[in-house]
Length: 178
Image (cartoon, rainbow, N blue to C red; front, top):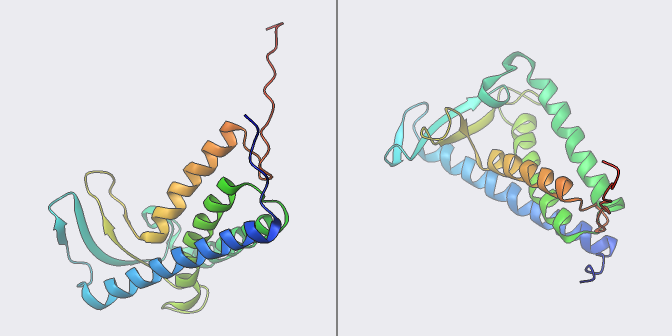
């Protein structure tokens, strides 16, 4: 079965940009709602212990690691956003890669917006977290985090399946000597 025709560069870039904007908007909207309606650092059961809202601000990364070096996360998120943007414009021709990188970029931009624009100040802002699933993990996270984690898993799947950014597949050669 022949592969699909590669996406034209403008189409790939548009997919990445549109999906990134949608995820960024969803992330920032849900953070706005959380800040407006949830009590700070108080448990609000939504579905018993399955889903709990717990509004907090995180100066670090996952599990509050690196809380004293918030500016490093700002630099890393900025670099990731630039790399994804570069790949979207110059190399991505695969529909799968365009979708996954668009959703990943949206998550990255959601947390980057917090780092740049939220208290305590520019480039050292704290990320708003409010989703807690105690049965799954002790972390408290947000919509951007969900997209970052799931899309990084998706990137791993695409890499392991041999799908290249341009939409071609790596040829697997059977080695008869082994």
